[in-house]
Length: 440
Image 1: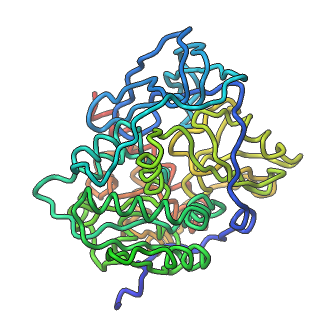
Image 2: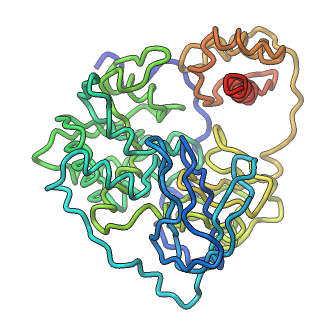
């Protein structure tokens, strides 16, 4: 293949996955309390259905989807609703959340429920079951999965792409999912192919995960066109547009979606969750989280109840080292630093990275020297140098005219800038300003 299973531009940050890439997944005990924000997916926040004093069992719906691009929220543990109120959110804001005091004597068994037999369901019924289970993308963006399973009728989907790249440094959630639950991943692929009526699936995995490549190749179904493709190790290989270019050679046009290239891309952990829904009937109430970094005593891959507070998760991993300095939700390239240990783990929380003081040294920003490193790094061929200058001048409309909305905030420009200009952060602020202006 002429495109050599990669994409143009990008960067090569240190991988730093050795802390957890061979650590088996284990289950975290239930904490004393879980906090479930109504806003933990892309789209409209869920609509609360419970009140203080209500008893809920594990898997009960506490908030309903409020529209098509929305997802319900379910209790991740049995207990009593303490409060429906404002709580710190991992994005730095405050959000409405359901607080549940976990019953320490409960067996945490879900109520008896009907497990749908997916083989006899229509595509619409599969999508409805996925939405009812609250499944969202587990790669970080948390886009409701049922929406991806419902492409417009005028968009012909030819290929399903499974994203097993996990190109962010430190994180090993997807890696361990592929190694330990390959049959679940293959079942999820089978269900998605039936729902989308596609004949071909391509699984993209970076070459730094040879055990995951070998495991998935060994479990490929013999009756479906499913193939595994080892990819060049480069950041951001796991971004949708980059992955599509690497595997198919197609370029998603500016302002368009993967659907316009005849492709649906799904994260490998989300695929496994779809299979779990049709195996157990349980909604999305827990997820695998990588807790890692040189500032945590016992780096781990854990199955964590959604809504677990950060402090409880850190305690489960032995606590922080004396030189721990900063905690990031997600990876160091695109993740968000946290200011409160009471923020909850969301459906889209891929990892918790604890960095040491020596890794977080404060640097001074200098004026742009017009070196062009950011242009050479940008995977979607924007001009970060120009956009950065416009952002500092708060010329938001001109930034939009220069394709700001195509920026995926991957951080490649900031990573390569010798003047330490926080370009990605400037673009994030600009996008927020434009959204606020349009809403007004």
